[in-house]
Picture 1: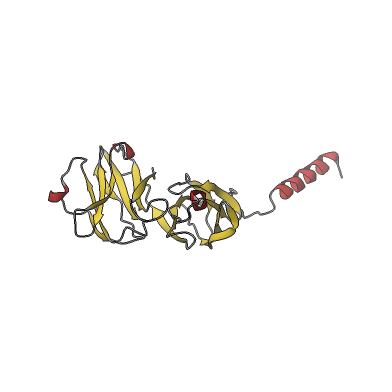
Picture 2: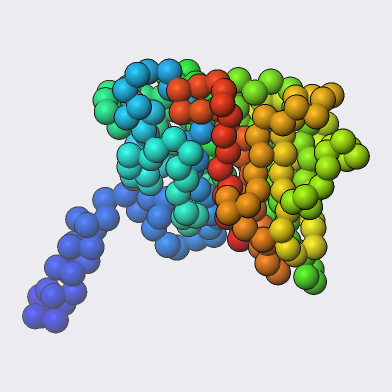
Length: 240
């Protein structure tokens, strides 16, 4: 064996040793999609650290110590079918999600850990991240609050009086998600009310929901408080 051939073989063996799984979800070499993870599962435990999650896809860590209301940024994943696992950060022997995730090429996903821990379920949504035309933006609403009940959702100008408004989405149940609504750029306000009433349970406005600019896309998620139930809260996810 010539010195040059010996060096080439050694390099190849080293690469194999460093990459034992040729089909790992983050390895380039095929069509890809994107995904992100959201911890939307409250926990009634007194120790608030128990709500945090470690998340793995095909054995690769994608989130560590993910707090309630926390979200990862989008990560690229090879199209295919991959095992998705989530464990409690404070006790990784406790598996709260154990299922398969099948991303398609060219598709973006948001994976929510929902319901109340330890009985966690997933809600996997397809995200429409193509920018809207012209001077406009898009908003999507997700009901991820186990305690909120059936609600109506209003998306209005910040100072709009709800008494003269009709809901943009009526009778929204837990784990429901709206389509994306297109609005002119500028300030918007999202209010979630008990269905059939004007009683506001979640109010997304002001500094928590800055004025939208051209091409932005946002997902507004209604949530329980950290330990479950009222007062209810929310998170705004930047889709684009």
